[in-house]
Amino acid sequence: MNQLLEQINVDQMIIALNETLFMTFTSLALSVVFGLIIGVLLFSTQSEGLYKNKILNAGTDFIINVLRAIPFIIILILVIPFTKMLVGTMLGAKAAIPSLVIAATPFYARLAVIAFTEVDKGTIEASKAMGASRFEIITKVLIPEALPALVSGICVTGISLVGYTAMAGAIGAGGLGNLAYLYGFARRDNVVLFSSTVLVIIIVFVIQGIGDYIVKRIDKR
Image 1 (tube, one colour):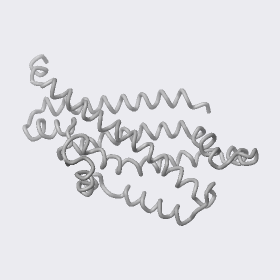
Image 2 (cartoon, helix red, strand yellow):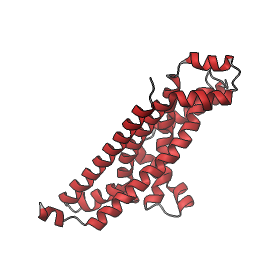
Image 3 (cartoon, helix red, strand yellow):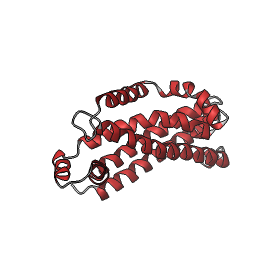
Image 4 (cartoon, rainbow, N blue to C red):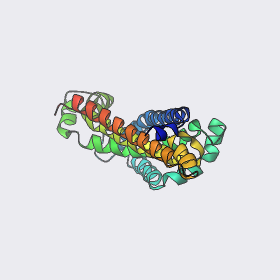
């Protein structure tokens, strides 16, 4: 066991872990903000929504479906020119953020719509009858009522992003995926490969555990 531990470059592993955490949680925060806005837009502009607009709803829905249909590895390639313009390079953890956000935002937006759909329509109608504005209904009724499902969606999106970061790392974004590929797979170092995999699994379990705990605390049903 001690011999195996001696084969691990701890400093290298910590750097890779920090890069994975940076990519995951930075892109998660941005994806949740953008995804929530798009989710509210999709839900509110549908035929029975607060801001009925078939054209806007159909157009947004089409874009979301297109982005969700594109595999992440292809998004990484397509976004390279935009990434270079934004960050100045296509390598490193920061360079992975745009593609991660583009991939995760439509995913969370769809989860947000599902969460809003589960809100009791009677509660929304009661708010209308009491004279609440459409903006107040969204901010004080719709989002708070859907909060447990929205938090659960954040958890699912975060776990997906961990997998995305590993894929991005394999083509130069850094992180545990890069470490596992370059030093574990390419150099046939099973210790590094196994250690990187274990750390990824731990991150996933932590995200899931925190998400489940928060959902239990805020779910009053």
